[in-house]
Image 1 (cartoon, rainbow, N blue to C red):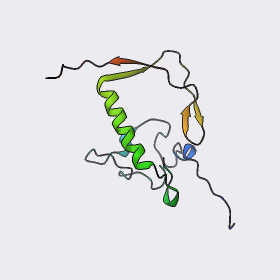
Image 2: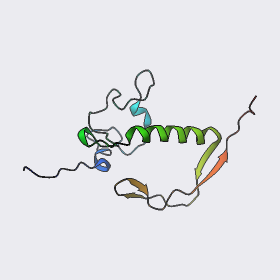
Image 3: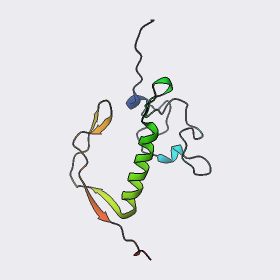
Image 4: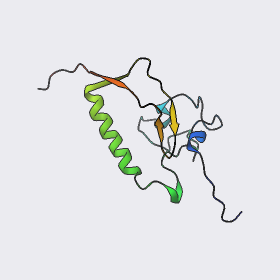
Length: 118
């Protein structure tokens, strides 16, 4: 009815077998084009089934910043360090406005072997 509020759950939609093969498996290649580039509209992606920052008129204003920040932070860290989950640390999710690990993610960092800079 007019005036109703409709909410789409990213948690549910992103794990729905109607839209995804092996929906509970982390498969980043789902978002690669045939030439290996990242694209949220990669072939075989059902339109609207993945919306980490909302969609349409309600899309998150910080989406571009979030993608840039995440890529730079991960690339910088991954260049020199390999993280490993502390053995026995519980991993559980706390869905709220954003999805977070309930107990944090206790990690140890191991320096990657790299040739010294020239």
